[in-house]
Image 1: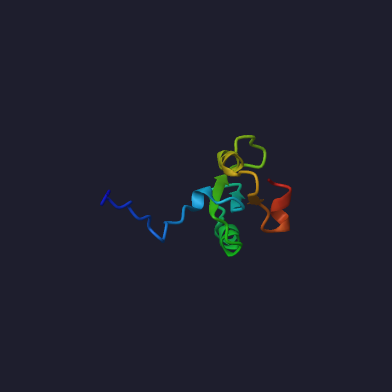
Image 2: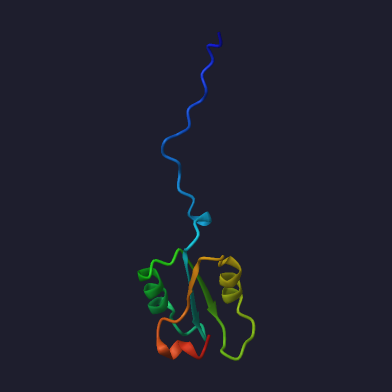
Length: 92
């Protein structure tokens, strides 16, 4: 007869949000260091975005590391939340 007992698994496993599908991923952008993206990030937080990527780049620039990061981070089932006001729509 074996007196060993199997180890019990914890009943409460730590949540791992980085692997949960269907997250909202936010992206905020301003054109210059003089501009403030606080209004945009506040709106993205209200939308309960799990992760928010940001850029400070001119609209004529093709280098958007924050947008590239957001697109690379986003997986099937996630939502990319970009536009927080109509004036930003043409600039993304």
